[in-house]
Amino acid sequence: MTEELAATVHSEFARETIEEHHRLAVARSRLRKILEGCIQQPGEMNRAALLHAFREFRERLLEHMETEEEDGFMLPLLEVRPDLHTRIEELLREHNRLRMEMDQTVAILDRHTEFSSPIMDIVLRIADMLDVIEAHERTENALVLETFCQDVGSKD
Image (cartoon, rainbow, N blue to C red; front, side, top):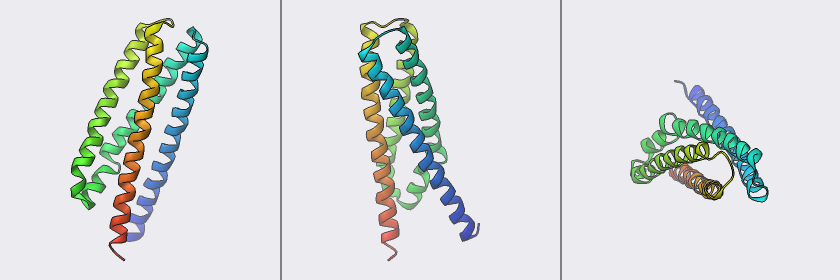
């Protein structure tokens, strides 16, 4: 692969990654608004909207995590910085924890057909999960930035 082609491929991947992070942020924001609506006005319409929005967000996040793991930034980071293995392994473990928690949440939402105490617990659980996802994303971004700065900075 020529340097120009490699730069184009990396640039395209970076653009797609930035766009995907933006789409996830929009979906997260939409889900937070629905959570607020569920707290302010619990009811079947909001429960159905929550289930739909959460499933949509879950699918997008699962695809995003799969891309990160298979085609994304993790393997290239390890190639440049093998010393990051432990930190990247922790991010991967967190992906697995998030998958399990999202699956459990969908199962609980499916079981409860009306707003009740367990559903309100799920509303709070989803809000906490979104906080964890945002912190996870900040950690990933910091790791990429740290690697970039050290890799590029060491060539000066």
